[in-house]
Image (cartoon, rainbow, N blue to C red; front, side):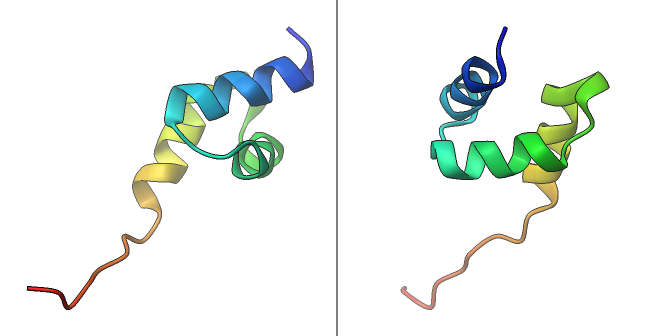
Length: 52
């Protein structure tokens, strides 16, 4: 699988933009790519709202 194909698969798998998927691809450990990306996304701070 090429880098571009992998980035598209990441975007599709995680429901994120290809721009964000490309960033995650570059910072994630390539030996455990999808596991590492999952961990990164789980650790990402969540947006909160004051809406009630």
